[in-house]
Amino acid sequence: QVQLVESGETSVQAGGSLRLSCAASGRTFTGYVMAWFRQAPGRDREFLASVDSTGVTYLHDPLSDRVAISWDNDNNIVYLQMHNLKPEDTAVYYCAAAKHPDATYLYTSWVDYWGQGTQVTVSS
Image (cartoon, rainbow, N blue to C red; front, side, top):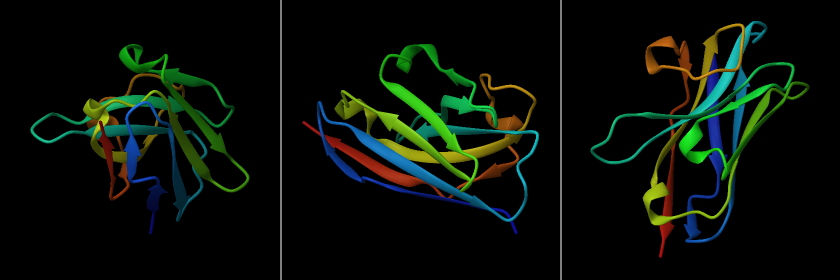
């Protein structure tokens, strides 16, 4: 059974930073791209970043100056780092896996596996 389990800071002050982890298990992820999305209340799920197994990354333009993603292949852990957090970054953050050859923008319909999500709250 495939599992993507997110963990990390849940409450951050504005201007601060966070690092979220996603522990992936249950299959080999060869040929998969790992990604992070987020969903704020009342809004659609938003793509943030993706990474392939070689470490090539794709960052969504609006956030590319504040976001980084990486994949520890040995331990099958995917990280999301964000800095200069703002209250509007408050959302549920989701880890995702999609069978795709390249790190690129991912539509939610392309995702094969989702994590359960982790709430991040940024206070001013």
